[in-house]
Length: 118
Image (cartoon, rainbow, N blue to C red; front, side):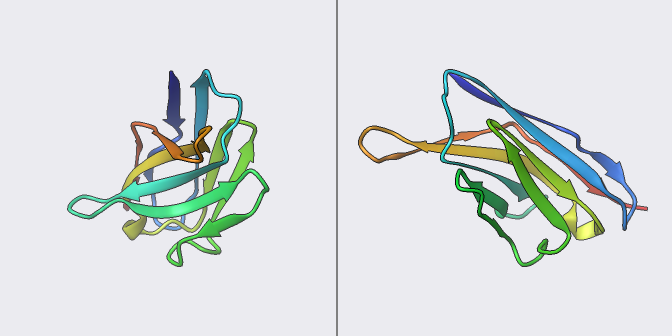
């Protein structure tokens, strides 16, 4: 059983910063990739950023230059700077691995609320 637990969300003023963390526990040796998604009220879940085991990272256009993903083994971080009200959402950690049949197995955290408001 694999669990992803996020932390670090909260209320911040526009222009402020937050750092999210996601720690994985359970019977997993390593993930092929880890990342962050977010879901704002009334909107679909969207990709924020992902990083592979090789270290490369992709970012949504809306966060590129402001957000930075980093990873230490099975813990992934999201440094969010210059936050905007439109960044308000529940942020979910995501991790995946490939099984013996090359099928993608995904895991999700329950999410942490980020609210950007003055």
